[in-house]
Each structure stands twice: as structure tokens, then as C-alpha cells.
Image (tube, rainbow, N blue to C red; front, side, top):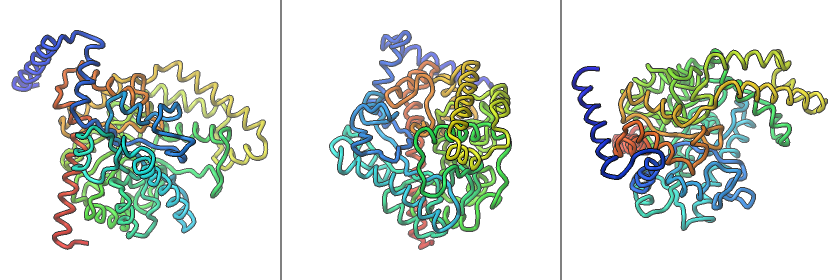
Length: 457
């Protein structure tokens, strides 16, 4: 560290110490008090919250404190989280007309749920925003704000016109892919098809598949064999159309090849809506330092996620899970085999599930769960590497996110308290909690306006 940087950090610590003296802050709850005040003064934004298929219905009501949801309107108020990107998700399936149709229904189900929440169920509490200016207007009025993100470009299929259709429905970012390659690009992780087309399994049937999907996401040692070596030619057109319309390009879940192709061709800044740092947690879903530097040069930002295995996953834990696969008898089995076992020999399936759960719990006891401090370590890493302007928060609540101390929206202030403990200023915290993503969104809109003025298609 050179002398000028040293002086800067010393000055920042002195100013923060003065703030503590002036406000009476000393420890513990004092940081929470200041955190709550900061949340009242700023847009506090989570860029990625998954919702269940029956969200915003009588079965899953987001307007009450709902134990089945990590994010509902009550928890948002409790945690001072006033803006959320709710996600229209579709799981990856076959690249066929039937697959596209199923994915479109799945994505539309989520998009319609967000509209239903804001326009029919609780319009007096939460409003849908279609621009960063609208986010500012709504939050300034004291209301909660919803924005729609779309996870997986798979529903687009090969029909470019659907990008405009999703924009018209309120979608303001699209995660180009999910688990498995699609027509747009290559994914960082292999896809799997645990269910036959149109079949929904009961909770028992879903349990083992969910566990295996989690393990597959985490411990896959190498990326899957590429399909396009990054973006496809069609994917390049999709990115160009997103730039033209003003939809943010999201590269979470994308392969490294896809990442570099997007960085090369996008005329607007891009985001990783829910990823963390590979330097601290070496899995294919996280971004390495070279990618983070490129994201800075692009003007984009990474929204650090709370998925425990993306936050802290030491090599010893990798090895324990790999040994578990062999120990419980999963070696050589694929999803089709397990589905057949579930349907034809449920006793064998239940025994396999019990062995998996027992071993999984045993491994979990050996490795302390990730907590807020581990999560903020990733924010620190980005700030130290590329600066305060290129990092935000995308919890992935509802999709596996949650660390000790930040397990749902009601605990959002704990993140701010930890940032305060580390010496971050209110201005810096405001950037992390939404300012940076809104800056990117404004830049994306500016690029869109320029391209439309030029008549680009």
C-alpha cells in the first residue's frame, strides 16, 4: 500500500471513529441502530429473489409474514429492504418447440405473479417499477418497489421478437442461461432433466433431486462440454436486442466463454445478478479476478450472493462431498436412474435418500456454516480489487440463498451493520445496497436511447 492510500484509510478510520463518538455508537446493537437509519434514507435493493410457482396466491401470500418465504412484504419492512428484483424463472429443458412452450409458461407464471402482487393484491404497499427513475420515485414515497428479472433466456428459444415481448411485460434484466446450455449461450454448469415433460413430483420425489442438483452445482470440478464455445450467433443478436431495448444483460450462470463474448460485444454495462468471488470460493458459478477486472472496465457490477456454497466451500468439503457420492451408492447413477427408482422401487429410493441426508448432515457439522462476515468478505474482495462502484447484493433468496445472520429479508440490516464495523461509510453502503446497480441501469437506458436514435436494430 502506498503512502497516499495509507493516509486515506487512516483518515477514513478516524472519521468513522468520530462518527461513533458523535452518535454514541460503541458496539453490537449500536451498529444496528445506525444501519436501520441508513436503510431509511436510501434505496436498499436486492437484485435476485426467486419466487415459488404459487407466489402471490392464497396458498403463498407475500403480504403477510410467511414462513415459506424468505422475502415477503413484512420481512422487507423489518429489514429495511425496499426494492427487490423478483424473478420469472424457467428451468432448462430440451431445445425443442415443446421445451420452449413449457419454459414460456413457467416464466410467464412468475412474471404474472409479480404483476398480481403489485396490481391486485397489495397496490397500496408495493409498486412495479420499469425504470430506475420509477424506483427512485416509489422508494422516495415510502412504498416498496418490485422489479421483474428473468432467469434463463431459454424461453426465448430462437424467436428474437420475444425479447421485446418480455420487455413489454416489465422484464428489466435477463440471465442469459441457467443450469445447462440453451440456444443463446453456454452455461457454467451442466443441465439435468430429472422429470419427464410436464410431470411434477411430490415433495418426497423432489427431495433427492434437489440435493443432487445442489451438489452438482457446487462440486462439479470442470465446466460442461461447450455447445457454442460461448455466445451463439443467435445469442449475439439477443445481446444486441437487449442493448437496444434497455434490458440489462446478466451473466450469472454463464460459462467463461459466454462471459468474455458478452464483455466483447455488449454496448452497455452488464451485471452478474447473483454470483460471488472465485478467489474466495472456487466454484464454476463464481467470477475470478480477471473477470471482475473486466466487469469494471465494462462499467458493470457483480451482485454478491448468499448461497452458502458460493460463499465458503473449502477443498476439504469438496472432497467430503465427492467421497459421499461413492459412500451412499450414487456413483454411476444419473437422474433417469433415480427417477426410475423413485417410480418403481420407492423403498430403495427412500433408503438412498436417508443415506444421502445422513451423510450430508454429518459433513455439514464438520464445516461451520457461512455467515454474514463470510458474505461481506466477498464484498470486501471486490472493493479492494476493482473499487466500490462495482459491487452490489443479489441474495438468491428462494433459490438457495441465506447465510447465518442474513437468512431472509428481515435481516438485511445485519449486512449493513457488518459493513459499518469494517469502516464503510454511509455513501459507500448506499452504493453497495443499490446505487451501483441503479447506475448500471441508467447507463443501459442511455445506450438504448442512443441506439434507438441511430435506428439500430
